[in-house]
Image (cartoon, rainbow, N blue to C red; front, side, top):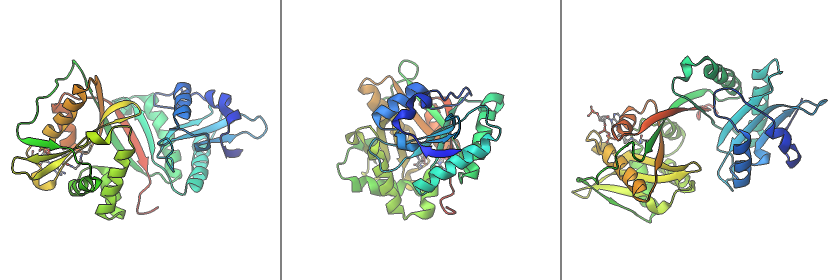
Length: 314
Ligand SMILES: CC(C)(COP(=O)(O)OP(=O)(O)OC[C@H]1O[C@@H](n2cnc3c(N)ncnc32)[C@H](O)[C@@H]1OP(=O)(O)O)[C@@H](O)C(=O)NCCC(=O)NCCS
């Protein structure tokens, strides 16, 4: 078996790799459009190729921001149906790529609600999880995907107890993100805080949010009538369209339902510029946030599963 990154001449064979399991994958249309946009790059598509037949026996595709210095997520893992040890082959492919990347990169998979009860979806996840685990991705997270759709959910009224303001100074947002991260139930932030200083972590969050296709000028800080900071509300966008980028309430203001006001501001903002569908994700364990989405008429339409490496032991 030969392990290598893809080149232009591989394109036809890459398009011939078909995943017919009930999970998200890099289907031909996605592959072509993301190669075009720069979210995929051929040198971030890894292949295991049969040396005698030249056939692609396994393929792993990483996603990143166009022009970004490193891939941010493993988006698709395919193994040819004839391979007897698909877990072993996939694990080896991932290990080789991780060695070149210098770390194990998170693996994101989208599945339908109720995937655990669906034998096809759970089988598709099971072998991939085992392969990813063998390649160092051993922490599992389930995120709920929500959508707000024009006509099906209301456009909220403006908050009568908070005032929203933009701020051009990134450091103001860094400070707000740092405060909001205290006591968070968000897995990603909690993990980052195990290895990073809170200011560095907040700075990273601000930088990551700035990388998104949404407009930085949309970001809002929320204040109560006394002028004290309540939190942050970031309308944003990703490749798929408008999203709730981030909602956060500082610890001393939690428990007053302000998450509803912040989310309402984001929904109102997007709706006001003609958006018809807004997507959002939150960890299944972040119950206050999930409830806020449900109260605001967001519908849980899918699940995002994320496997990552323990930041302390890698
Ligand atoms: C999620 C979050 C925005 C909720 O804000 P909030 O305005 O306090 O939400 P609510 O007032 O609706 O809270 C509902 C309940 O959850 C509790 N709660 C809220 N956040 C909590 C937290 N981080 N830890 C434990 N309990 C929390 C509240 O105290 C309240 O409890 P009660 O019903 O017993 O009074 C806030 O916790 C936060 O900013 N977390 C960090 C950032 C984050 O996770 N953002 C979402 C990322 S998608």
